[in-house]
Image 1 (cartoon, rainbow, N blue to C red):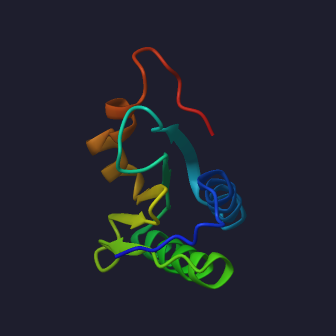
Image 2: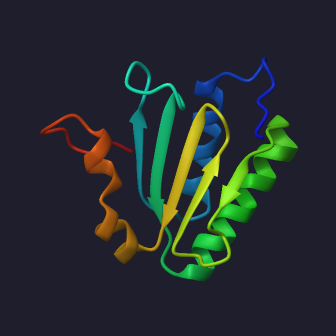
Length: 120
């Protein structure tokens, strides 16, 4: 189970995750505000890696960063295949896809308001 220390806000976690993904060259980073829409988390972040190897590396490095910098024990699923990795840090859920897998599932469309453009 993931544990988030009470002194770490969801906004702090989101900012750290977005900064890490930008630094590590994740592509097409989108954030979705889930507050008031879902009880599972406050934010969702969706991004792409160019290859299965990059997807797995992004997921591993991000989960390590959350653990070391914020004492957040995130649950990671799908890293073995590298097509779609889910990182559940409690308040922020991160999905890292290979581009073709992201296009197939179109996860953003499920959570964005009708007619809204994805934001980064």
